[in-house]
Length: 352
Ligand code: NAD
Ligand code: TYD
Image (tube, rainbow, N blue to C red; front, side, top):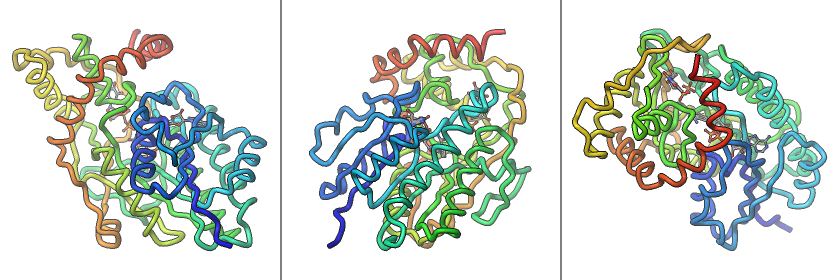
């Protein structure tokens, strides 16, 4: 008998995960979608209020590092697919506390691989383990060049080292046990529900509150920005149509030096808030650089583009405006996530 399709999405209460859960719950009503999330500081069920009562959506609170719990969950539900996003995701936090990145990103991933293998070994047909990773595993680019799927891994931060390790484990399970997997490595995302510790939402929140905008170093670092919904679309495509044991790079074809992006954001925010143009730029403050700061990331997304016909649907200007609009109309969300523990984090990061 065919197994009913049941997909486990880990980290679905987080930034990218919530967009992936929404897309799968909405587009695949015949498939049961389980969202497994430990609800750390970065997980927020408010991100999924609009779909939480759908009949094919189920939330499970739990920790991917808990081996016994994870094995039991897989034995009980026999997930035919896994889309794994749960992770510690912020570089600055990884510099302060590398061990929690090792535990969640490496041990947690191996736990999921083991549990999936435990259920399906000998019967891997039509099953898929999809691992969501980052372009940061490739390290840093100079002035030119792009990361392709064959670029050597060269991670520089505890975060990227932990993600690189988890990618290697996924590949190793593919080679050793024949576990069917797809990995994607994506560039920097932005959009609604982005936790305000990352550049764009942090600066939106600070601009709203007339707080300094802490630009690291000289601000000449380059990132390739992708609207989060376009990442969710790419994951959907690669999960369903991607080739087994393949990696897909996903990127926005959209490189910005941090300082140029911050200046554009200041302008958009001044317009939206009805402030005189130039008001927010005055908040820019150059601060001590991040240790091991990667100079430039840029993705060559031609493989997913050619093979799966994916390309971003939103330009950066449109995406940034949508993002700013979302934050300005969700001030309660912002107030909730920036209360309590966030204040302690902010003080320890940004106060000398
Ligand atoms: P996020 O920090 O916003 O969300 C992570 C989620 O995982 C949270 O809901 C959190 O509660 C959950 N989680 C953390 N530890 C857990 C544990 N031990 N057990 C269960 N759940 C746990 O992260 P994000 O920005 O949405 O990133 C999601 C994934 O995408 C990560 O794997 C990240 O490496 C990858 N990624 C992120 C970006 C980006 O720009 N944000 C780019 C490329 C890839
Ligand atoms: P971030 O959003 O943390 O993503 P990542 O480090 O994963 O690329 O940072 C994006 C860029 O913005 C990165 O070059 C670091 C820089 N940055 C600042 O200049 N100031 C800040 O307060 C933060 C959070 C980031």
